[in-house]
Image (cartoon, rainbow over all chains, first blue to last red; front, side, top):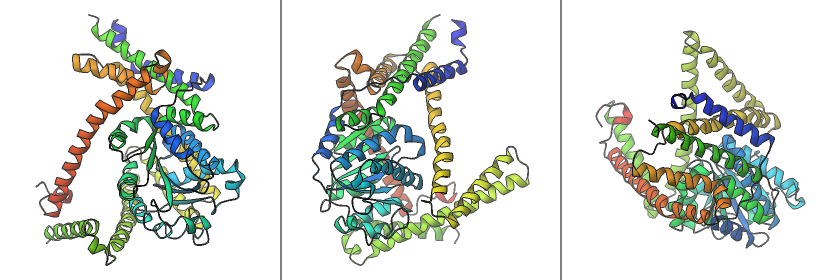
Length: 271
Length: 207
């Protein structure tokens, strides 16, 4: 018991390492039952008519890709299946690269998007002072993003932005933000609440409690929560199942952390 | 003058932004778009100041052979090397994209992944049941932990509903309280800056 009381933290770290290696070598697939929030997000996208405008704001960085990429890919894949016209923007330079990579993968599976850049989808990329650009986009997207896309190509000749001129309810049916920090707030403050456009947030698990007040107040239409939400969405939308493995790994880690927590309490209680 | 000018600048800039956000009549003149351009320009200026400041700090560290000065060389080479590359290629070109995703990606993922190690250590040493309140906290944490990882739903069908209740009622109430408190604090600070009463951001000990 004394040894456990003085347990070197490196033994605990070794446990984390073993769990990580085990999850990588023997992937455990868990398909969770969809929650009401994920189902709401799915239903909103499922109700889109072909050609409906959807704004996707990517706010997560490279550190959160493992958790967030499957979610973004599942939602973009579903939107492509519905024939939505997708306008992508980013809140940071790294997020714009992430968005390009994920959408590139989704577009490669669908000819309408693989050859439809500028018609079925566009990546506006990142602009300095991103909150200002987002707010300005509610009255004119092209001007807010300096009339060029992620790669510097002019927006003027792109049919998608001739149809979807401003980020508001007149032109768009849905807006998404995929976030790993507190970047969701500008989407609520500058887009969702002033324009009435339904906003869906896809977030890492840690961030979900922050979103609860906005969800309860009706300022958010739905939340897709972490790897579990991604796995639920993939199942609902019939997208490639990448997140089940993440749910399995997080289940193994959760059981380990819970065991460590209980052990710590047992050790502390013994005389 | 060294004190009064920054105070007046802060007051006028703050009042200008408040006017553009709160009064639609002001925006009819187009000043809101000018305010947006000023904010973008201030972002660019802040980045330039950061670039210069970082260079000075690390050049001094190298010059004085301070501990870990080798890392300063790595930082400067990486910063100027990547910035130099972007003079010749757009950020969306394959080479800058490849460097960004394959160098920065593992670095950021590692930083993010380290949280798991700290959480485990904290779970062992700090998450102790010392009284009723901490017992309730531990029980709620365990329920949420197993619920979010989909294990709870496999153990008992009603587990997900329990997690949904925790998120919808106690979590929502707690975060609402925190957010309202933070918003009132931010509003109070903003009013103090506008009135010139708040000076700590200028380095003055007077709050």
